[in-house]
Amino acid sequence: MTLESDVLAAFPAEVHIPAQLVADAVAASSAEAPRVLVVLDDDPTGTQSVSDLAVLTRWEVADFAWAFAYIRENQTKPAVYVLTNTRSLDPAEAAARNEEIVRNALAAAGSAGPRLQLGFVSRSDSTLRGHYPLEPDVIAATVAAETGETTDGVVIVPAFPDAGRVTIGGVHYMRGTGEEAGKLTPVAETEFAKDASFGFANSEMAKYVEEKSQGRFPASEVIVLDLNIIRAGASAQDPAISAKAIADALEPASNSTPIVADIVTENDLRALALGLEEAERRGKKLLYRVGPPFVRGRIGQEIRTALTSEEAYAGNTPSTSGGLIVVGSHVGVTTRQLTALTAAHSSARIIEIDVEKLLVPQADGYIATVVSDVVEALHQGDVIVHTSRLLIKTDDATASLKIARTVSAAVVNVVNRTLKTFPPRFVIAKGGITSSDVAAHGLEIRHAIVRGPMLPGIVSLWEPVDGPAKGIPYIVFAGNVGDDQSLAQVTRKLSATF
Image (cartoon, rainbow, N blue to C red; front, side):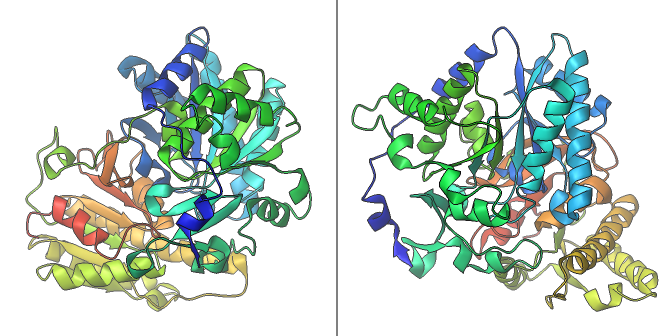
């Protein structure tokens, strides 16, 4: 481990930048031709850093038309999230889904009045797991095929400071917590780098790009926007100096040149946003491959304070039934959060789904028993449903994804049948694939509004605006965020019995 203070000592202090300065720059550039960012979110947890934005779990042209109309009619910030769930798909399926979404978004934008200009964001994991460079490659190719516009650069910004992921000197780190606070661990040395489907060996972002592109993009050709560039205006506290330095550094970008950026604070994200705005004003065509908070910084949205219990139910009357907490993630922090919740919430009923029983032909009968138990328990109070903590892995990435999808399908079945039998007071889904499938299929959400975070900077609340879950707060909780008490804290805000 390395001390963060020691690493930062080599760089300038941050430049203080109000969110409104970025928002004004975005509005000015959109004055003649309105522009919307379409965020292809490879699991639903990317919404945890934003508020009051539309989110789609389907991507037909009509769905984009609804989202673009929502932005226009409600004068929200110019971004819409599309839940692709591609982190749970194999590469061929992920590529096809990205292409379909981009084509449909462009078609809807072409028929919107006035015609919209679209920017595309490939939102992925702050611990570097996901289909890279496949997804930005497909987005760039589809944009070129549909519009003739070529991509100059792909801006890679995995940092998520709220959750302890920062990039300094071109190296991506995880911050320590508790006794390890103030220390940094290179992300390739964490459990996330050993992911069965998306493992990696390099924490230095330029080398990560070379590794994942199998040498197509050599590390030496990656443009690195380190803190000397991001914070170029530090001595004068002048954001314009930083914006010019960033835009100047991007001048050589062409043919999807990878561009990686140091980010430690929200001010760094805003400085980067102003620089990207300037580069695009000069004519650079950019795509983005990013972690959760990038979009908030890019559109100039203020950091939303955590929602209160009252705000979580605003405009809706809470049910008197218990709430449903569904836990599918297997990363270490999730297991610790589950342990802390079950220890603190003594009145909650705990129901474990035995993963091994889901992988046999008789699984349907077992799932029916689980549903019956959940419905009965919801009449009394909150119910915690979790998959068994034994992680069944194989050495084959495709087989690992298949097991994960089988388990997720069972969880979805339980949630959907429960919803239609006895709707819960709230639903919390813990884990990326879990929360995606629960949203789109378990709760049958098609359109929702991200209201804001349940904890500072992390864990988002969606308000479904259609379907059988309309009005039921839905909490999207990434597997790899928060401390040991975070799941209990969110549950306590929503529960009538905790």
